[in-house]
View 1: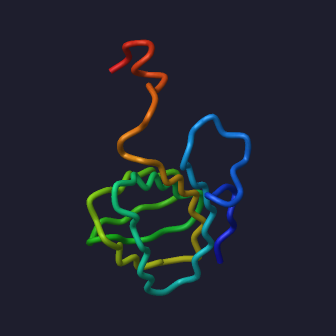
View 2 (view 1 turned 60 degrees about the vertical axis):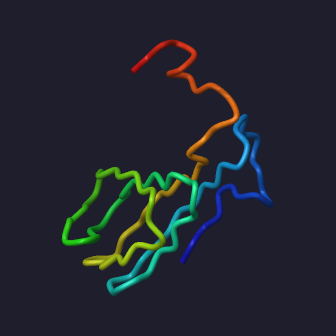
Length: 102
């Protein structure tokens, strides 16, 4: 189950173009998760446990995915995931760039 928080058709008042925000609920099992080219997929595990490429992630873990076509995800227990999809190349300066933060 996927809850759309913001996508191209429903831009909440974000000051960033092309940002998509989702909350996914996964039941135990295997899933293929599509990755959009030229985008970062920032994923936060709100609760649960999953495995990607023999690496296990659990509640509180955060990962960033790029340069993939899709992810094969093994959900080890019911899992809630918060995902933000953003362009790799931004048309504006980020907060870190504006304030010279590395």
